[in-house]
Length: 340
Image: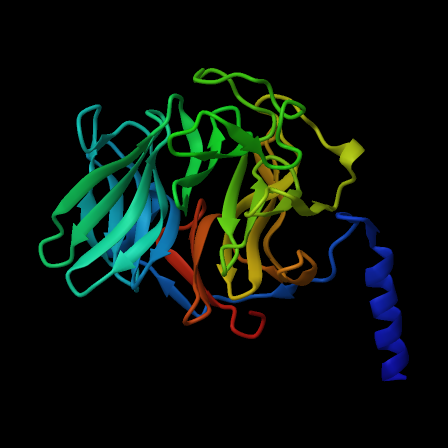
């Protein structure tokens, strides 16, 4: 009897998913596993969490984008305890107008190094942090001719970029030519650059696979995912979650009720924060969830979270996910080791 029930359950999952080549529509999600935090970090020491978004692991440390006037990043230890404020707001050398953590570079006994994007100025810098006195050296690596939403060095002078109109392309140092990622050319968003008032109907974030051979792009306004090959930009897989393509709303500053709010990687799995939020009524219509996909972008697990969560990081060593939220101060930590 148990075998029959398992067979029926598996059949229902298959019926809830339509796969057309490299495009998949997940018509409905499987039942979620309810999670309870294994630890909650509260108190005055963690009150700054309300000013952070996003947060990310950088070696043994945590770096958060700090949205306050006096600095740009907050450096924390592995237990989310604040260590130092890094960088300055401004238009001078080594200063930032629009800051965003751009990825881990290296860590030694003396120095932590990571990339920092100034999306408003269109620059990518290297930040070297002394781990003894937390002094910072900022080195400009690349200056683009326009504002940038994303810019990642791929090695040998090659870059993966998304300019202010949120269209992804490759470029190379010393060359004016660009190569679009498949599907991100003139058919998506307007060809508008450098206009702060322009709000693309498709706005996204991205995360690289564990071996850096793929990049997963997730829609911040719609329940859509794209998986691309980093070598040539080929679209490997596109996934729609709970909605079909013709059900999506594409208007400036108007998104769908369900969308993604962040992503992380653990080994060969992608972990995404997925929420249901009605912007018109300013209410959450369902609990936040974590969707865990394998490297082929096939959904494996759905986990249900507590509270209204705005961002998270994943420690690949401990398999713990750390969340900051809208309706709670401090941090909530969940153990994801059974699923990743």
